[in-house]
Image (tube, rainbow, N blue to C red; front, side):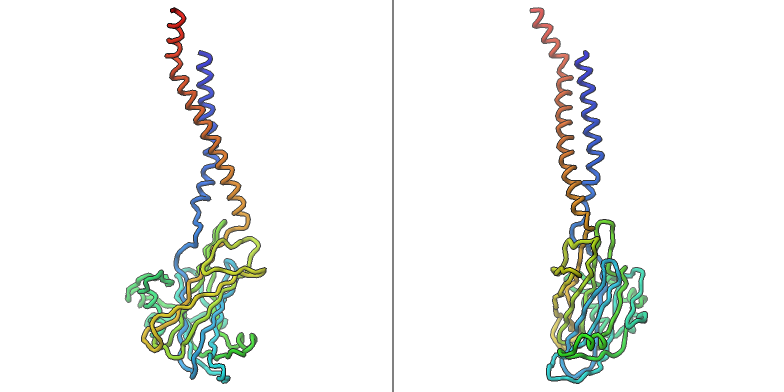
Length: 328
C-alpha cells in the first residue's frame, strides 16, 4: 500500500508540475505566434494631384519623408520633360487628400488645407476616387464602395493654386523653392504597438483637373523614413533599401487608360512598412526556444504520470496473481 500511495503522490506531482510549466510558458509563446508577421492591411491616405496648363509634357515628382510614428511630409514638383524647354510655367494644381477618417488635419504650404465638400472637389479628384473604387485591386481610399449620398455629406482637405514647373537642370534649392509641400498627420499613416509598427504610406494619383489628361506624362515617387534605434525593418512593399540614416523605397508607376481618355490617370504602388521593436526578435526567439524545451519536459512528465497511473490501476490484479502463485 505504501508503494501505491507513493505512486499516487508522484502522479499528482508530475501532473501539477507539467500543468504549471504549461501555464507559465505556453501563453507568451502563443501570443508571439499569433502576432501578425505581414503588413497590416487597412485604409491609407490617397493623394490625388490634378493639374491643368503648360505647353510641354510634365512629370510629377513626389518625395515622402518623415520618421517612424511621426507626421509625413509630402513634397511635390512638376518637372518639364522637354530638355530644350527652359522657361518656367505656372500650372494650375489641385491636391486632394482622402484620409482614413482618423484624428488629425492636413497642412499644405504651412497652412491647414481647406475642407471642401465632395461636389466642389472637381472632376479630376472625383474621377480618381471613382477609378480607385471600382479597381479590381485593393483600393487605397478608406470609404470603400461608398454611395453618392455618403460622399455628398463629407468634406475633404484640398489645396488649390499654381505650381511653378522645374527642369531637369534645376538644382535642389530651386526644386525646393518651387515645390508644393503638404504634411499628412501621423495618425493617418502609422499604427504603433509595443512590439510592432505598421506604416501604410499614401498612394499617389496624377491626372488632369477636368479628368482628361494632356500633359500629365509620368509620376515618380519615393519614400524615405528616418531610421530609429528602437526599431528594425521586418518587411516592406515595395522592397526597401536601408542605409545608415533612412529606409528608402522607390514606388512603381501604373496607368489606367490612355492619354486623352476620360478618367485616364497615373498611380503608384501602395507603400507598406512593417517594423519590429529592436529587442523583440531576440526575446521572441528565446521565449519560443524555452517554451519548446518546457513543453518537451511537460510531455515527458505526462507520459511518466500515465505510466504510473497504469501501474496503479494494474496493482490489484498483479497482487492477486502474486498471491495465487504463492499459494500454489
